[in-house]
Amino acid sequence: MKEWGRLLTAMVTPFDENLDVDYDKAVELAKKIIDDGSTAIVVVGTTGESPTLTSEEKYELFRILKREVNAPIIAGIGTNCTRATIEAGKLAIESKADGVMVVVPYYNKPNQKGLYEHFRTVAEAIDLPMMPYNVPSRTGGNMEAETTIALSKIHNIVAVKEASGNMDQITKIIAGCHKDFLVYSGDDAFTLPTLCAGGYGVVSVAAQVAGRKIREMIDAYVNGDINTAAKIHQALNPLFNALFMTTNPIPVKAALNIMGMNVGGLRLPLVEADEKVKDTLREELHSLGLI
Image (spheres, rainbow, N blue to C red):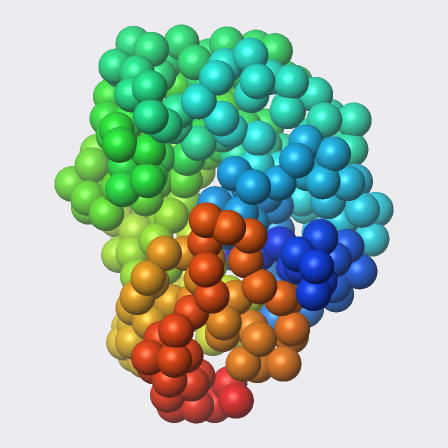
């Protein structure tokens, strides 16, 4: 939906010293993200450590952020079980979320017909704008362009987060869907290439660290200043690479802590960044004037 805007941030879930969800810090971080130029927040996605959060914690995050933050809240509800995804969607509805993000089912590796039926069934059961999320590197399966194009014809499937890293596939989706269906890059490094191919924006990890610069890049492109957009992309690319040196959200949580946001650690089986990763992050944050 255009009301979500072009720069969506996939937010980390802050934890306290006991690795309990720090809801106050989550509100603080969400407000900072919006102040830095993001137009909506995706809560409890991969970056939010969704696999290790309870249903109660997810609902509380949806509810509190919707109440406290003046921006669209998109709830991550996807699982590898269609029934469980629908149940999570009911929590999103109760929390008055503005939409839902639903990841391609992982581990059980459905074929393309199974993917279509999964998303269709969830969309019919949940009366909210929905964004499927294709991330083959994590799920073990790719949702092909033809499947996304077919899903785009379902009235409340309004966008896709496409993190295949395949510009040919991304371009096919953009060309094959109607103009009101929004294609978001799921990779920060593909933001500008996706815009150039006719996509709409990005669901960004890096925007909670460098949101103002990413927003400047997007605005420059939209306003026709391609050279400025390209220069910002080039400047940001080393940070994008650093934020994915190891498993997301390990580096981005380390970067936020280095910047003084103090979002805490990670729940097992994820572990904190080592010194090599932290040193690289410090170097890139310093080069961009962020610390």
